[in-house]
Length: 210
Ligand code: ADP
Ligand code: MG
Ligand code: MG
Image: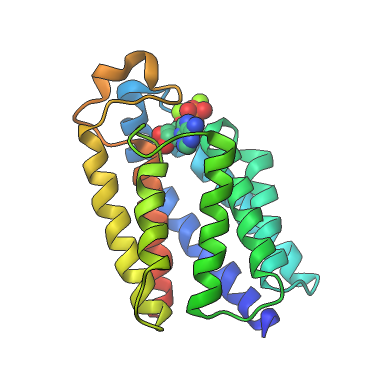
């Protein structure tokens, strides 16, 4: 049921919070190369607010979709920074698609599709601009084109694609966001938002694997 799935949404978000806290310094360091160094801090603030908001919604009896949407609102409110606005709005869009559904591979792919579409609309970045979109799009494509009906398998493959793309973003020159004025300095270092995106998809994949 959607109530049951809401418990998993909260539990998965808690795992994401732990992983993002562990990666905070590394994400900050990557963002220092050509950005303003606050990506680790912003992601921690955003994801902890998301966990709190999802917990509150779940205790009030909300289904999975409403918990995820509340998580997005909490994230956007408290993260600060470009990535926080995008993650917040993306999670809300995913939650709206998830609605009262119980989880399966098809609805997960639709929710990720909505998250990606919202992030693209709001941020206006293209693939190759060296943003989190460079990890997000391969992730979305892998999930939507998965031939397996197993969510665990499909998500695992998509998370691997996101990780590869995040690493590959090192060779790109930034064309969006704060890294743009120091663009050349960023070559050789991956995009911070792409790295954190890949990390989050991996942690959720590990959670699904159990
Ligand atoms: P800020 O850049 O405001 O300090 P963060 O450091 O938290 O915010 O996030 C930076 C990340 O946000 C970048 O590494 C990039 O992945 C992502 N980003 C920036 N602008 C955009 C955009 N227009 N579309 C998608 N992602 C973006
Ligand atoms: Mg920053
Ligand atoms: Mg900033």
